[in-house]
Image (tube, rainbow, N blue to C red; front, side, top):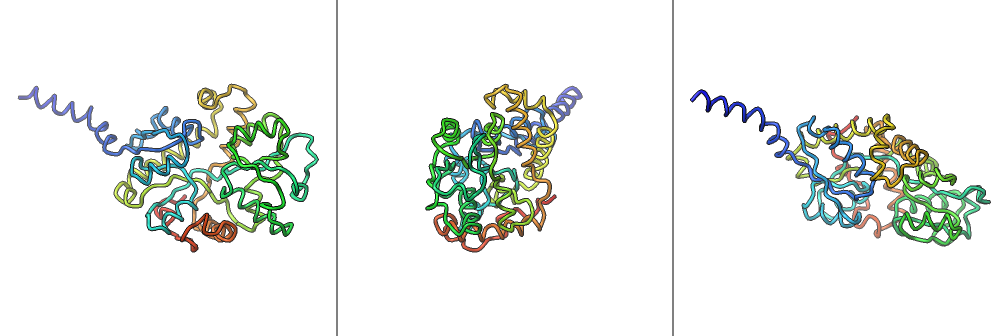
Length: 324
């Protein structure tokens, strides 16, 4: 009898934590070569999820749209997307919410030696734009051009929509004059000699948006977060610890090099710097207010095609118990 009791106690000690983590699995949808994969890999490699009594389970998708469909179908618990999409879903009656992932968005890049020196010089030029006509960075560039030059860049320039790798190649070959792309593709371009004409962060400031608004974040169902509040808080903590490690450790980027597709020290350094700059340092009422101001601009320029029925910003877009 004593031996059986001893084995029972040992089983509780050994299996208890594993079962607790199994009960708090968080299925995260991501793109294999996206920046979220780097953070999730760091969390899992260093056991940061286990430290917070959760188990992060990545699920890979071929596109952002596929990840959104999976979230809507309940196949994953969270994905990274932008909060205007979350706001639109809420306007359509789907109660998603959001916690910040990154304030890095992108930049408008030009080749070294380009004659383009200002926004005005872009008129009549071919500009590569990732993400399509409703890409948030493109809408913000259009809003800024309207404010500064009194023109709509949808008509004043020739936008060329496409995937980031393709547009980087088009810029390198001189087939487009500039490219508005995601930050990590901009970092790769900068490492090869290109330079930013304008960053999306600068555009936001020139449009009068105060504070550093994280555009991208982890989106999840409100009902799931209410049921798994402790797991969500543990995930947020693990995410922030992974960011701190990625910001400070060059060795971590060397470890991730196979995922990044490069061992070039200049590219790795540029990616680390871009990631570091994008880490949200504050998430408070000030940033939430700035996001609401930004939403009003997006509604004005993007209209119903962007926001659907959600013409007014819903404060519940942001999960209320996460602040720092």
